[in-house]
Image 1 (cartoon, one colour):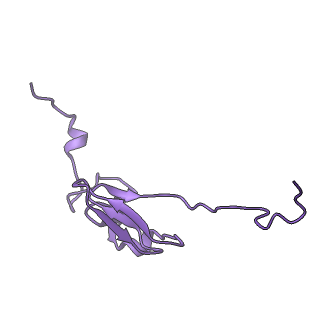
Image 2 (cartoon, helix red, strand yellow):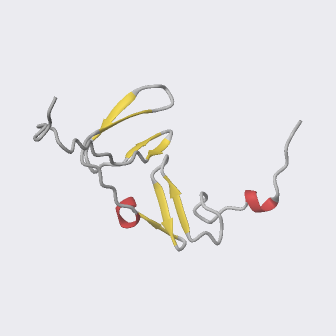
Image 3 (cartoon, one colour):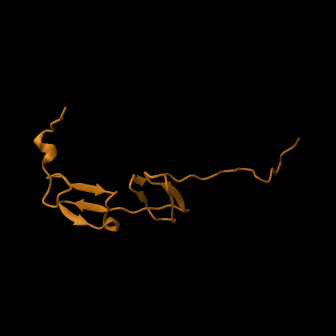
Length: 98
């Protein structure tokens, strides 16, 4: 059984990877980016901020370490893990009584 797609899904830009009329194209897996029909470098469109290293795996299950402020991009795409802060409001137990 074959599935036919409407022609609009088969039409691509002259560059071959984004649809005509698209304002923004992000292909994180292949490291290709477009803004307003013009190919751009990733740093011109996206910025990343992370205080510590990130550990992320690819489709083969192999883990890689990505440094601070480096996007964790593998063949699975971008890992957008959020920032977290461990908060211990009174870690010295001042004023505590038993």
